[in-house]
Image (cartoon, rainbow, N blue to C red; front, side, top):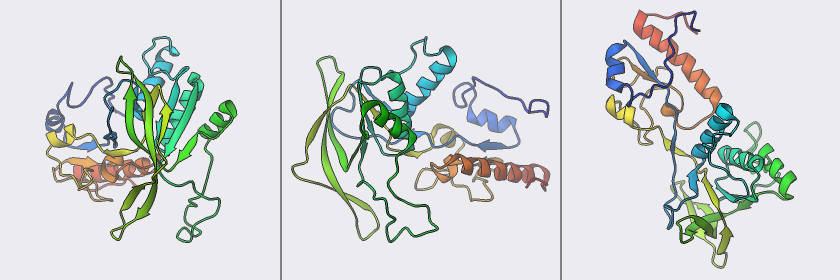
Length: 283
């Protein structure tokens, strides 16, 4: 790719080392592919305690330290000998389970706020739609092999974090919830009386999704966003309200899969080429 004329600038943070406006002024076109990395937080008592981290901070620091020093630099959040609770039932939560197993956690529990799925499709999930049924992912299989049981607990909602005298989290309080859908299609979580529980926890990892892209670059370029805080750029065109600025991937469509990022990146390159050259031969 370098031989084709591409210049790669590493260790350069847009908005810090180079302003977004400077980038826009120096180049005829800019494509924003910044992802949707703003994590969803929990707003409960004790959130400020030490030992509570966003899942991506845990995973990113782990991988960077592993690649840079085989973990010898100590620049990562370790789960070794800790009672780990992962809040969130998705893929990112499973990654946290796998990493914690390999660190040597004392125990691992994964909270899923939804009911446990059955092995059969629901009436509203017929073939050929992707089957929404109970599955056991590789990370959960690893936890079962090491700890002897599935790490998941269902219909669990966190109500409070409790710490010790040093400000380190030591336990987590929960209540069971029932999820229903109201007349507007919104999920309603109703607490189930008598299901309160206290869990021992030294390390809590928040893996409950993302709320959209980081806003600093978007705001600096005065790029318009949608109600979901994603960049307002039409699918297939990818152009924003700012001439010469395009957007593709998760920052435009919201958190999704890498195959969509590849697809949108290729299409955005075509539209960028058309903007610069007047036409494009790209697919």
